Length: 96
Image 1 (cartoon, helix red, strand yellow):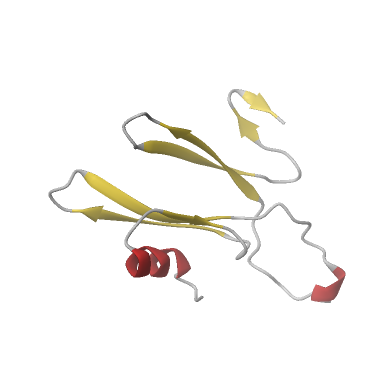
Image 2 (spheres, rainbow, N blue to C red):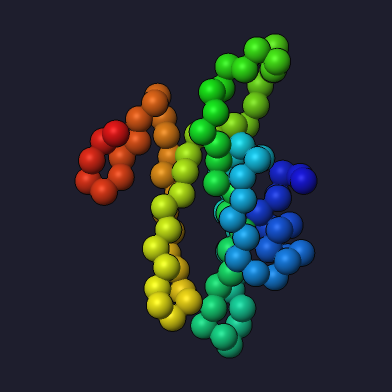
């Protein structure tokens, strides 16, 4: 991977790609002209603790987040990436 991994995934696979393991949040939408269709590459972030002992204090680009999806019967979908800051997040009109 590289710093533009969301774009790399969309360009390589040519479909919607949602993935984890890279620990940061990154999005790259690609509009397919004439098809009324956009595909997206989306890194979903992580739910891990930032202060892992094996990191030995090294800086990271980790971002805590998760995704919420809704799938329509016609095959389309919508999603939200919910960011977590200081162990809290806002979704659906509530703070958790």
